[in-house]
Image (tube, rainbow, N blue to C red; front, side, top):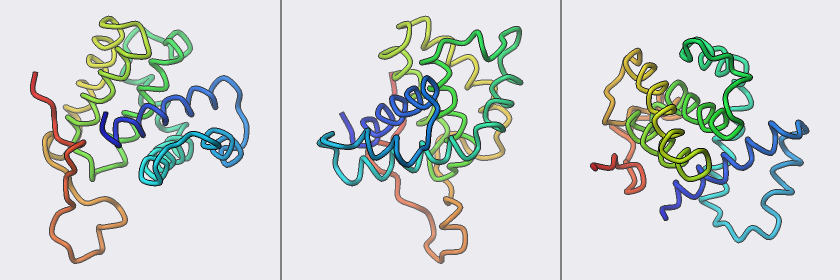
Length: 166
């Protein structure tokens, strides 16, 4: 498993924990990582995702609600809701990650931790709707917000961020 996949899976676990037992994000993160054996790179990426989701939670939940026709967000399974929150965060706020990578990762994680193929199809349908509304290429990364003022041409795509071809 790639480091970014591992970080995304751990981010989903953290978001699930925060959804089930709302508390201070910092104390939740500290407790979660204690004796986890995760690399610093995994921890850093996962924490950036969790903090990003939590800082934009209201807007993300509104976007999920807007894109789930005939589904109130309270009816979405807890795992699928956390996966959607993470994916929406990546699609809306992390322009350094290609949209197809975020969507592929969300589908695979939903199948693994949610309701199997049905969860994957549900997630795919919702995320494909929002992908169409994005004003950026689906298969390439842009600059992250922190890189927008930098002089480097394009951020590197890691092997973990390459779209999977089935």
